[in-house]
Each structure stands twice: as structure tokens, then as C-alpha cells.
Length: 135
Picture (cartoon, rainbow, N blue to C red):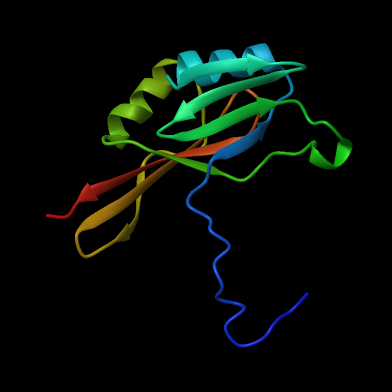
């Protein structure tokens, strides 16, 4: 692999994230959670056990682990919401496993960053995030 001045900064043309895979144990249960509880737009399913959702232009793929090395929770996905208190209350009404209440994480020059953690139906940790305009 070649390295040297300028090569470390060379672009390979990445434009954005096109798809994120989320490991699931029970595909039907996970589809119901992402579609009905989180309200993501279901796009399509494909064999053998794949389901796809749209999340603001990023496609989420739900699938069981295809090999033991992939059978573990994934990275935390942070879902941006305009009103974290209302989104948290909605998840609470739907009996979602909430790990933390909304809390301010950082005060930025033009907004405050708020987060709240929860688990999906497959025990993956997810989070709500909201950028609340500063006062």
C-alpha cells in the first residue's frame, strides 16, 4: 500500500453514507419496531431475511448475522429529532426500553446538544439527538 505526502489526504470519492446494516435476531419483530415504533419508512424486503428502511436518505438494512463474527450489537445510531422531549415521551408511551432521560450534553455557540439513549427490540443501543437553539 503506497503512502507518502498527499496520499493520506487523497479522496476516494465518498459522497455520503448510503446504507447502515443493523444486526437483528428476529426480523419480523425488528421490522415492527423500526416501522411502527420509530415510524421509519419501510422500503422493501429481500431474500433471504433482509428489510430496508429510509432514514432521511440513508438506507437502514435489518438482517440476522450471516456469520458468528457479525453477531453482536452495532454502533450507536443517533436519530435527529426536532423536539427530544416529545420524541422521548412518545417512546415512553410505546414501552420502549429507555436507558437515559433527555439531557444536555454540550452547550455550543448557537445551540445546545441534547441526547437520550434507548434500546430497540433487538437490544441494540440507539439514541435520540436534538440541537436546541441557544437562548
